[in-house]
Structure formats: structure tokens, C-alpha cells
Length: 317
Image (cartoon, rainbow, N blue to C red; front, side, top):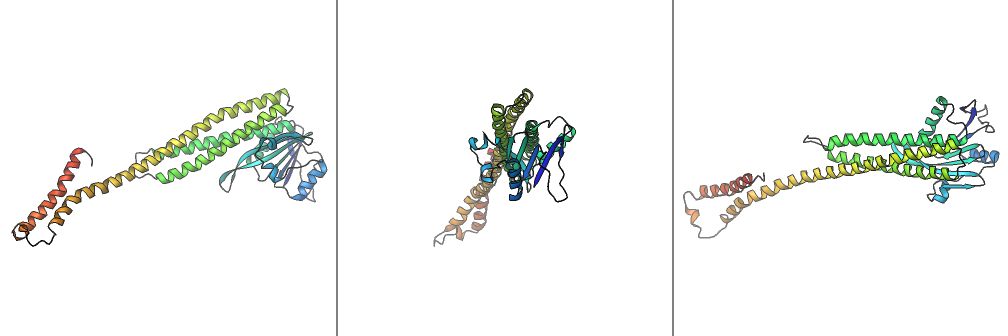
């Protein structure tokens, strides 16, 4: 898909499609390509003489391939977090600042881009030029990551109440499953925050920004710096709750093993008595006693009750 936007009377406005389905790109300030086909790529490259990166180039992880400047303009490849099929996934967006235009290329439709377009309608001065538009996208991204951190914190509070509850029946395995999901979410948020930090630092060095935009970038960097400690705190909270849940599971398992151990010790002496009198020796005086059988039963009961009372007195039960 190809979306084009122009600046009209200080407002970011979508350029409508013509009757033949084409879009007038000549007056566009922002060209947003979402999983474009070869025809759309060729059209943009032919009209603006602008080379668009391939998918392999967009996914490169080395800094020299993600932040650079060449004859086509300023290139920034940055990670954005998006819920895909109910799971947060990181996807790379390629930004190209060339001339008076901003080109964006990404595989999935992103909520951050939709939020920026809504903001631009309410804040006319938000997208006064292509650089401000780029910084507005990064600002919306940072706000989105902050919201995600708050959601992770809320879920961890819920799991904390579940794990540390006084109730006997607690779904600790379900709590561990939720903790692993939140740890994964938090890890992806941290990756995006660090990537944003690197991208903003590159723009501060090489972006040829105005004084206002440079201050804007510094403010965004301060926002990112303030979110990273909170992100680290959530990692520590996940580890604490994970250790607590595993410890409670171990305690429950130890209680079960303790019951079996006590049962084995209690029934071992009566078993020994029964084994002795079960031997088939010819001379066993107790076999001829009138009260031999009741004596053997009483001895077995005494041998079983005595260890139980001893453990009870020691407080082991």
C-alpha cells in the first residue's frame, strides 16, 4: 500500500486517490509505503529518483547499515513495536529524509503512524516540515513504549497479588506463564528504547537540525533515559516474582515428599514386626500362646503410633 500526505495550510492532509486508483505524489511531503509491491516501488523511485532499500537492507543490524547518509539523503532504520496476531512483535521502519520529503518503508501497518496522523489533525504545528514529521513519529513511538511499560507494570501487579496471595489454591503455573510473557514484552520494549536512543543520537549528530528540533531531540533522549530505569525495575520485579513462584512450588512439592517420608517411617516398624512373625521357623513360642496374635497386633500398633507421637512432639508434623 502507498499513502501520500501533503502539508496544506499547516495541516497534514492525506492526498486522495484519483478515479484510476493512482495518487498524485508530486506535491507529497510524506510518502508512506506499507509492504509495497514492485509497481509501487518503481513508481516512487522513478518519480523522485529515489532508491528504496530492499527488505534485507532494512533488517540489517549493524549501525553502519541502519544509520547513514549518502547521495539519496539521510537514512534511519528503527525498530517499532506492534501487536501482530495478539503478540507484540518488533518491525523495522526505514526512514529516508531526502530534499523536502520524508519516505517511510515498513512491512506492517503501525499504530504509531495512525496516532501521529490523528495528532497532526489536532496540532497543526506538529508537522511543519519533513524533519518535524520524523521527530513527531519518534515522539509518538516513545509515548507508545511508555504506555506499554505501564501495561507491563499493571500485569505484574496482578500477577504479584496472585503469587503472594494467602489462598491455598493458587495457579502458580499460570502465573509463571504470564511472567514469561511479560518478560518477553519488557525485553522487546527495551530493545526498541535502546534502538530509539541510537537513532536520536545519530539525528542529533548528522541531522542538520534547527535549534528547536535539536532541543526536541534532546527532550526525547531525556524521555528515553527516564524510561530505561523503569524498564530495568520491571525486569527485577519479574525475576523476583519468578523466584517466589518457583519457591512456593518447591515448598508444595517438599510438603508432599514430607508426607510420604513420614508415612514410610510410621509404617516401617509395624512392617518389621509383621515380617518377624511371618517367618516360617519350626520353633516360635509365640505361635502357641493364647494371646500371641493380639500381642503381635498390639506391638504393630505401638510401633506405628510411637514414631507418630514423637514427630508430633518435635513439631515436625
